[in-house]
Length: 367
Image 1 (cartoon, rainbow, N blue to C red):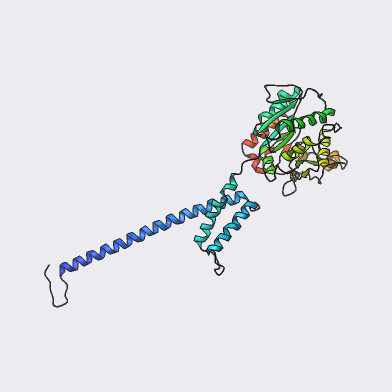
Image 2: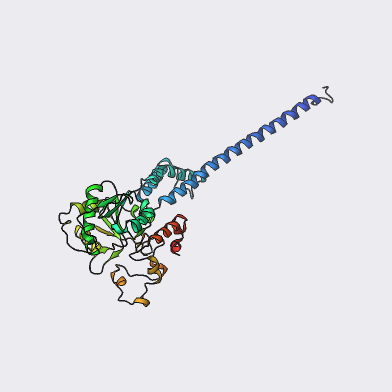
């Protein structure tokens, strides 16, 4: 502890104490820098996660959604008012981008939780088909409907809920009176219990989730009618492929005074005539590439068997199409909705393929 040297010299003890304080200061600075780095990392991780989540939400919502566009416009207006986005800057900062996408997610989160539209499905069947075709439809695609009804001339508790029409006879020639009565029953008892109403035959398989995606693009408050568009000499949707109408169209149908007395025998043709008479919109069911989604025959036959080279230009299938038919795999959308003349074992085959995820691979569900 003694000082050595002359004036201005530093004592040994003081020199050791100064060195110790310097080391402590360095340690404190390093600790502060480490803490700051940790906080910055946490901040970046938080906003990066928000950014990724928000972009995923935007992808799911779709850029054509009017509500999303309005939310984005409001957000940008708010940013300009607050000076968050400067017109003089060439590009927004990373903080501004992350904050914008995070707030976009918060602003539009409610749009992704829009309640699903209710779907009522009714299947036209016969007592002799209850245990085979009708049961297969019930056990496969039918259970995905919000409400499932069968229309027949005989009740069957084992099948499910059956709308019994006692005053109709079971024959192909009298399908229109039976269907006419069934639609009026839907209007009378179910018009407020669903947004969309699907009619199908007991040998039609419906890919329900694809149908829901189509219908979700439209409002049930508009008078709409969709399916496989036929136009041989009048406009209507194929009965075998199945067709759907909106709640508004059903309300108009039940309120039309001439509906129950409309004559005829061909179910789909006469129903289309009523839709046309009331001014209901015939909705295009094809996909963005113009490929059909509703099929009045089996998709396998349409793809590989029903060809011009085999049947010629006079085959009825070509004459009934509203739009020019396409042969081969491009005949049918990967997101197909219906296929007709489906044997019960074929319905279960489609269902197994759908449940295994093969339907998402285009038409491979049929291969």
